[in-house]
Image 1 (spheres, rainbow, N blue to C red):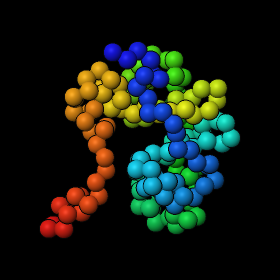
Image 2: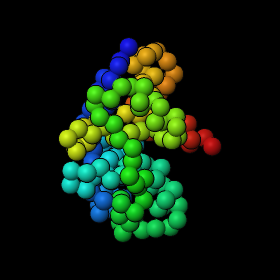
Image 3: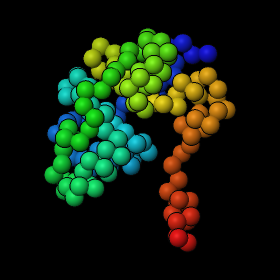
Length: 149
């Protein structure tokens, strides 16, 4: 069983500046097949932006995506973890604060991300959360299912 955050985190982070447009962030998400990016101002993590943040906090309000900055719609001041923190700390933070992802920071720099399914995958690789975590996005199948509706 994994003991440390570094054992369960997704290494590497896609980061954007707070002044980047949400279009820039959305394009990164699309090309990298991810649903979130870390918002960093220099060497400091200042937020987390998800595809849902873009949808709910900007697009649904009618904002121009080219004019809206990542910093204005991201979740600010996220909890962070260190690679050598115990996995139990990640689970406790997620439960206590109802959060789904936590940036992992080392020496002030983001080095990974722990998502809700990561600890489950480490404990039980065949579990439902682990399977969802590993699943690749498949827009074609989704579109095929929705064409008949």
